[in-house]
Amino acid sequence: MSIKKGLLKSFNSGDYTATVQLIGSYKVYLEGVTVARNLPVAEMAVGRKVFVNFFNENNAKEAVVIAVYT
Image (cartoon, rainbow, N blue to C red; front, side, top):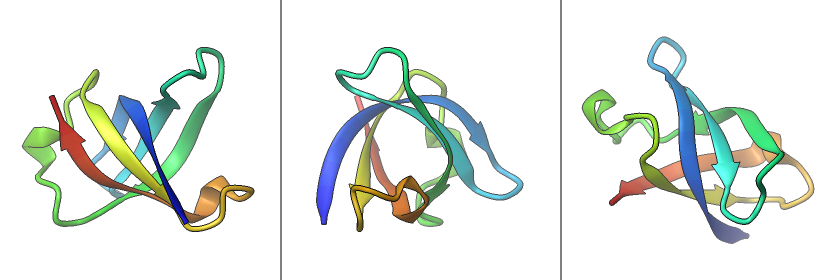
């Protein structure tokens, strides 16, 4: 398990998923990343910094956005 920093590129409040660009990766975006339901919709503004928890670093489908910060 590892935690990485990222930038929020988009947020879908309907299914609570996000598109995230990992810090240091300028060309690759992770799409459809699950967002923890305890994060308010109002906090999920494009450009916010996020923490992404990877349960398996080889499978982005098992990642979860666990926090937003400035």
